[in-house]
Length: 331
Image 1 (cartoon, rainbow, N blue to C red):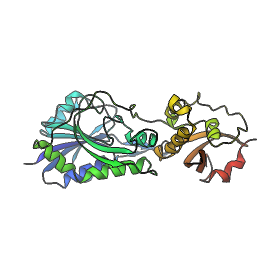
Image 2 (cartoon, one colour):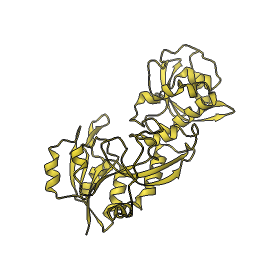
Image 3 (cartoon, helix red, strand yellow):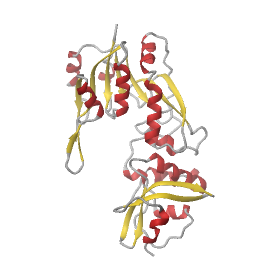
Image 4 (cartoon, rainbow, N blue to C red):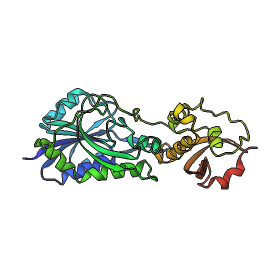
């Protein structure tokens, strides 16, 4: 007997999990659920996401979602026969109750954090952002869980632990997490189906904030703050302040536990350069001889309790070190 499974998602991580199940004789992927193609670039080209492409290449029925999952899809799902499991990986859409009830055995989700820590859509970014700031902040895991209607609060089937490395960006974090579960996924789901794994109920409350979806405003740091952490003097007034760019990083730097500790602030900025890479990137606004310019901080480190900018990019310019381009500052 093969377990019939549907997969909802969009990214290369979703495809990696789909491939792991597709090559296992105990499973049959009956259909996939994925976002509609998106317009990309100045030419507004329609680009299919990786799961959509993989499904077409393997002649697997694909259902596309634009803004939300409409109940009108239920009849189409049912026409494709019963499913034993729904596996959700990097999907990004709210799963309605009627869809959670569709599989005969369970709806499952792979969440790359040590739940109940970092519930939400950006767990890797938040793990990296808070590393070295809290006790055990370098420890993480990838979790296989049963989905329910609450945000990442379903019963846990298993957690595969790993330790963050100091130079990881979000890409390395997610690659490590999903690589850890890929080869074990089929066995884990099969063991659960055969009652060899007993679900563990999560606590209602999380010890961390929600790892919400990020925006460009979240990765802004004021130039005034950066200069202070670099032990450099403000040369000219900048109008682009925290008030103009409220976001996650600004809020954290103003947090009482962090704002009174310069060492923690520098650690947070260093972490942010990694956590927000390759998107939305840590950035600021600097005063130059040609007016105010956006500058990305792509790499930095802490040395003798001082922030050192290693690699930056000013809008319209090539990558460089801060020492190579600091002479363009308006005096």
